[in-house]
Image (tube, rainbow over all chains, first blue to last red; front, side, top):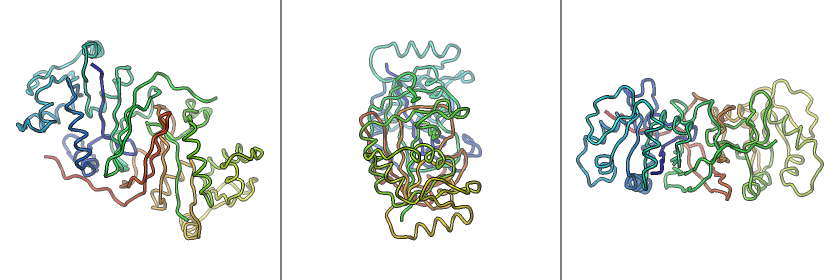
Length: 200
Length: 199
């Protein structure tokens, strides 16, 4: 399976609390919900189709908890996102989660890189990572990402966690797809391509 | 004149050292590789300029490179930079050697507003990260163009601060060049709209 990350990100690189303000999940983050008003039917359809392509999901613990409480309790399987998340295998990286209640969940702890490597070695399909900023950074740093999809939302949030750390590995990227949606979200899909070349 | 900003950024939002490394601060400089199409767009942008507004660091870098080069006679960038007025925001620069330079050192906001009130097409801000942030904070930016280069730099100053005012943006245009540079033009559009709280 190829590992694809999908992230809603603001023009200033923020990824935290895209869907809504949630004091428990994101203490101190007052500007949550910056992405949701920008999704109209075309962008929503894109996200639906993205989920429909998934063979399996890989989550960080926080996004997993959020999704379990939101998507995991829904029964409307005719919704493509509800359907995918409730019928495909879910893997969650966590050292604290032991007894996940959401059916079809497997917890990865210990040698996570090896476990993910084994998943990726399986034939075909997409192993999708949605949200999960900490995990995405770790996957990038460990060269485990095959494709990064960024849905860049036309907003400067000015607060909250960013996807990319201030200091981290440098990575060249190939742009493999790009498009714009009616309310100004732009999609950029990149493939990591080794170390960058620098001008002298 | 409308005030437009033109900034080269990486996918991780770094704006420092696009063209060359900056010793001690941006060892990974030189990440902004222009293909022919991106270069043509940049030429066209400079040709539209009626005047330039710079921060001091970017001004000095431009003065030390473009300002010292002989006219190649084929560069719209050279021609624009040498023939149009250049305004520099600085409290330390007093005697700029580059012709057509005017230093702005006090009441910057009203000086910029005066310039914007003049007839003409564009007052352009290239690079100039600190000035860009200040202009955006003070609602003086009419349009921002981002050249996003396909690279994660992982080091160096970013265009947007970790903490700052929030702004809604309107996407004016977007395109991608053959080597994967994406160009987005945005217009600031007041405060963003936020979704209601998720329980």
